[in-house]
Image 1 (cartoon, one colour):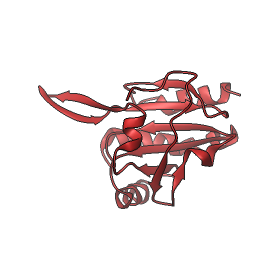
Image 2 (cartoon, one colour; image 1 turned 45 degrees about the horizontal axis):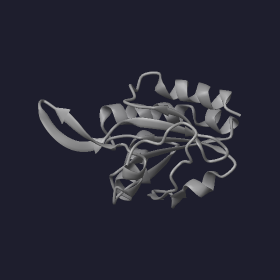
Image 3 (tube, helix red, strand yellow; image 1 turned 90 degrees about the horizontal axis):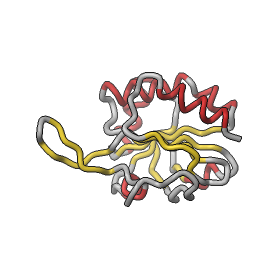
Image 4 (cartoon, helix red, strand yellow; image 1 turned 90 degrees about the vertical axis):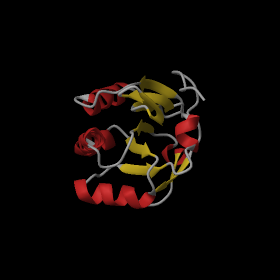
Length: 155
C-alpha cells in the first residue's frame, strides 16, 4: 500500500495497546496524530516519544490525541512507557496490517544492506477522519512541536 494523501480518509485500524485497544473510531470528532516509529527503546524513537509526551497537555488542549505505532508487541510498549515515563498511547502492530495500510513499511538500506522496516512518518488526521498533513522521513529534533503547531492551526 502507499501512504494516504492529504484529503484521503485515514485507513481504519485497531491496535493492541499497553493500556487497552486503540481504534481510529476512538478519535471520531477529534484530531489525531498518528506517528510511526521503527523500534521501542532506541535513541531516536525514545526522544520522539518523550517529545510527544512532553507536549501531551498542549495536544489535549487542542482536542488532539497522539498515538505512536511500531511493530513490537504490547509487552515491549509497556516496558518502553514505564522506562521513559511516556504519556502518549502506544500501539502494537504485531501483524503489520496497520503499517502496511498506511504505506510506512518500506525497503530500507543500511551499510549497503537492504531490509524492510518502518519509515518514520507522522500523519495528522482531522476531526472528519481525513488526512490533513503528512510528514515523511521525519527528523526527530523539533518534530513534535511542529506537529503541535499544525494541530493548533487545524480546526
